Length: 256
Image 1: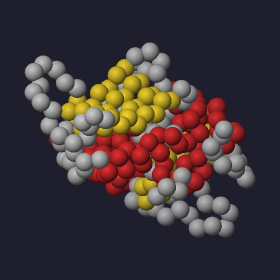
Image 2: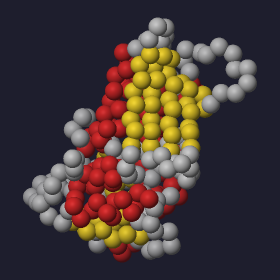
Image 3: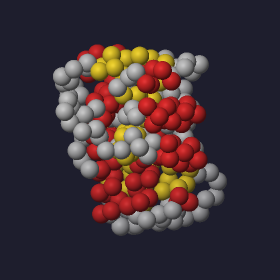
């Protein structure tokens, strides 16, 4: 089933990262979602293209997002950010750059993962610390960042739900680690083969265990989700522009 609402008109879309895996998936899905794509990549000059498009989508490299965000802000263009691997400093500078435009920024554009985020929040809030949390994610061998952007979002959700600091994260274990603290979140990133993306959040208690899992078998789901976010940012004819803010896929789906 195609989760992208059927468009009324074709809109120009500028895609940064067109030669990457996600870029190719977005180009393949764009026509059916009502977009005419202009693709750019490293080495291209995006300035005039940003000015002449309706919406911009970024699935490139973490160092390319800030310059593109500044261009979008200069020309008043809405932006969808799907690139991952940004440092805290990069994220802060991007937030500052896009204060006056609407942006959808998510580590994962799957509808299923958006629901996984909501369920993880509910579980983390409902289950007390006697249920310890472990997160396991697996991706293809070519992925450059770890943990994944999806995992980072899940970890942030769980930390906030349980009022835990960033130091609560434990990335892998080795040697004589001792007993496991109740306020620790284990994080494990697996890489190999052509895995599109698997994420499992485990809440392990005494006598029972809850596992929330999502497994992606096609990049098409992420492409359709990103295009759905792009369409959501474009106001219908006669409607006011989307309020400048940083949104996520839960907003796009009406869950927040």
